[in-house]
Length: 89
Image 1 (cartoon, rainbow, N blue to C red):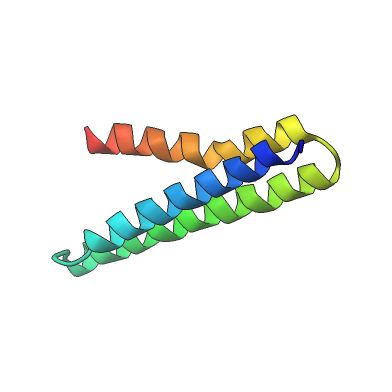
Image 2: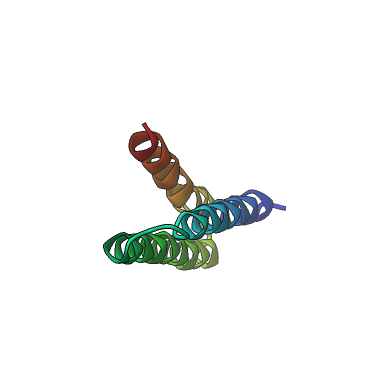
């Protein structure tokens, strides 16, 4: 039962990452070549941050540090929300 919240945080971050990747790919339709390269790097960064967070969270769960695993699993969510707020404005 103690693993429900960390797993939920991992799933939340995964769905948010997927949503940002889909919206970024949708924005690539009318982009120039240099913009395409930039957007590809953004997508790669989103995925890299999520995978790193997922691996670190699983390692922390295996060590029994549930609270830290939750924080690490939610880190991409917080970072991506800040990016949307800063870049979107």
